[in-house]
Image (cartoon, rainbow, N blue to C red; front, side, top):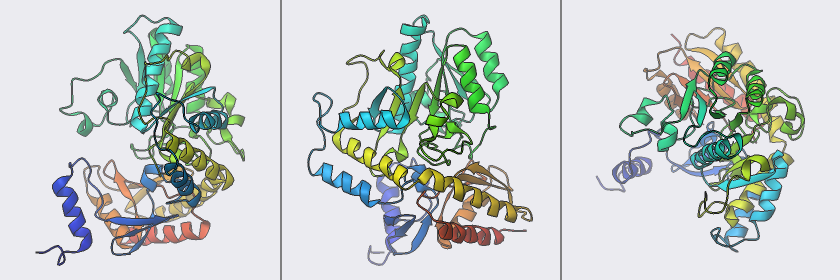
Amino acid sequence: MSVIEKAKSQFLIDLENKYGAHNYHPLPVVLSRGEGVHVWDVDEKKYYDFLSAYSAVNQGHCHPKIVNAMVKQAQTLTLTSRAFYNDQLGPYEEYLTKYFGFDKVLPMNTGAEAVETALKLARKWAYEIKGIAEHEAKIIVCDGNFHGRTTTIISFSNDENARKNFGPYTEGFIKIPYNSIDALEKVLQSTTNIAGFLVEPIQGEAGVYTPDDDYMMLAKELCNKHKVLFIADEIQTGIARTGSLLAVCGNCSCEGHCERQASSYATPDILILGKALSGGAYPVSAVLANDSIMNVIKPGQHGSTFGGNPVAAAVAMAALKVVEEERLAQNARTLGKLFRSKLNEYIKTSSIASLVRGKGLLNAVVINDTEDSDTAWKICLALRDNGLLAKPTHGNIIRFAPPLVMNEEQLLDCVSIITNTLKQFEV
């Protein structure tokens, strides 16, 4: 069959399957255009995007202010490496650190790179400041975590699909149950060589597992007590997704930079950002900390050719300005409550959906089936057919995370699509 005779989308899917590594299992839809909360496939069918590139596109697809900043800088200067200064990095570093309330930032590109950076930083601090003997520092992590897929990170992952046949694994990690203050306290009391506690304020890949409201605060207090760094991975949850600028803010009701009013609540010692830091327009990540921690890094000890490049700096500043100017945290908070309220009304009488959970516009619906079933996948295919794109996680959980520029009318339209689709699967 010739290319012309094949459906355009199937041809492109076949092309990826033939020439690309099979390290993903995408939903069968081929997208070619995006604007705001919508994307279009190659056949010009329009969809609501309810994944937002795993929360990278919080500001909506192709936001004109972000795109314009990227284009303008790309036409001027794209890359110098860090062998030289450039005229965008300093202003970006000042803007970012003041925005989140830290002394310094170490700029990187991807989320996994930022996590690796934070781990190195915590260990170096432990040896040079805390006084732990070299090679003895441990970092506490949580069961069900997802921080990336590098060799070090999969070493403390529960995802056997990501781990199997990739060893030997990196040592130096202690796993505890998520959302268990007792487990954290027990380890901190019994072990003296702990450098840090790495935690997601909400476990996204685990199915939007939302901990108790006081979990972050109590964890931070324990870390302070035992002189252990509290390391928050806000790559997916940060930058307005959960209804506050940072998810570690919890349920604060502030109207501006939420973490500033919540500084006594659960301010991280090390903050990891990525994804929406660029609005999905460019790979940008960052690790933020105060001087007492960040100053252990000296020239030549860590870096990246592309980290802190001029385009990344210009794009990230524009993306953060959009979050503030368009009050995206407040919008996520309001629409998230509405979304869960409407879905809970449906779930009361549903046999196919058993639970909706989340914060802000990071939510998940638990499907009433086993993790090894394909029911959630089939529901996502039906959602696609009905004009909404979402993806299962952990087999029987569907994550719903639309761009934060969504309005109430659009959200209610999406709720209607979701509930009408679920009705097709009711017993």
